[in-house]
Image (cartoon, rainbow, N blue to C red):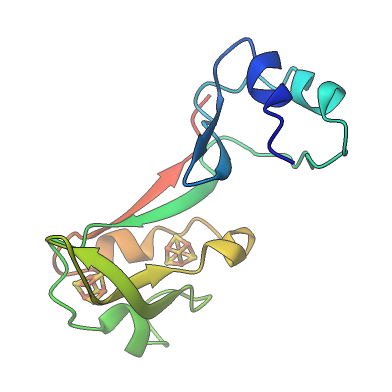
Length: 130
Ligand code: SF4
Ligand code: SF4
């Protein structure tokens, strides 16, 4: 319902809204669970994160040359097939680009193969750091 009670309850300013989506900065979150206490709809689900766990994977579309290794080389690239081709913004235009299957981030096993195998160093896994 976007009441933003969670935003106000967070002492570490770890919760913020971007494009109407609530996001958590895991570098700031201390796990106090104040947000869970104040949410009137019980909309916040707490899952455990461990040091070095991959929280998301960013792709630098300026560096990416669309070699498609990350989506085509299924045997050697991402063991969990977590990349796909979709619409991305590049230089202000919507073009075809590589995207990370954020909805399946829990499948990521943190092998960091994507980071080392992308020939353009365009893939950057973001890991949880304590
Ligand atoms: S491997 Fe790297 S350069 Fe090639 S398509 Fe994927 S992100 Fe782009
Ligand atoms: S870290 Fe490994 S499992 Fe996770 S997205 Fe990269 S290649 Fe796939």
